[in-house]
Each structure stands twice: as C-alpha cells, then as structure tokens.
Amino acid sequence: MVGRFERNKDTLQELTESAATHVGNIAGIITGAVREVTREVGDWISDGIEMREAARKASADDARVAEPPSEPSGG
Image (cartoon, rainbow, N blue to C red; front, side, top):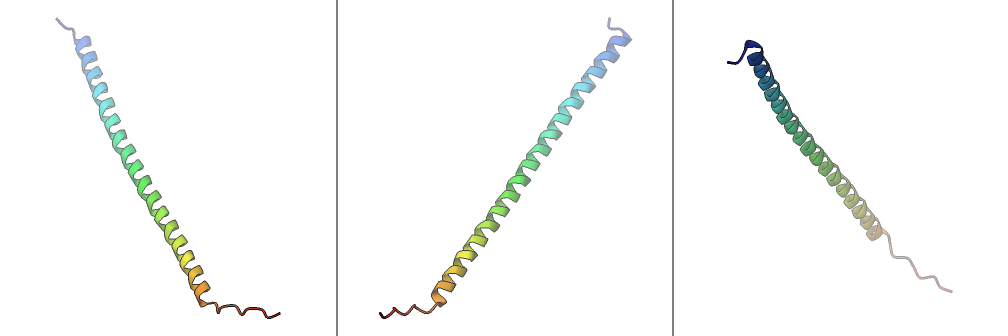
C-alpha cells in the first residue's frame, strides 16, 4: 500500500514534469516565432538595399544618357 507522503510526492513529480514539458513547448514556439520574424525583417532590409542599389544604378544611367557627347579635341 502506498502511503500518503509517497502519493503526494508522485503527484508533485508528475505536476513538475508536466509543467517542464509545457514550458519547453512554449519556449519552442517563441523561439520559432522569433526566428521567423528575424528572417522576415532581414529579407525586408535586403529588399530595401536591392531597391536602393537599383535606384542608384538607374540614376547613374540617366546622368550618363543626359550628358551631351564630348567634342573631340582638335589639335
């Protein structure tokens, strides 16, 4: 026959193990969410950098096309 102390110990042990499992699962969910948010923010910043570089190249092309051709120097 199991005594009262041992029953209480077993109950506390099960409760602690259950809490640890749930806290671990919650931490995994949070970790995954942080990882996904970080990836999205990084992709967003990369898009911005690519757009800035494309705009800079387009601006340089516009400036090059707008310049009148240089006259050959006569000697």
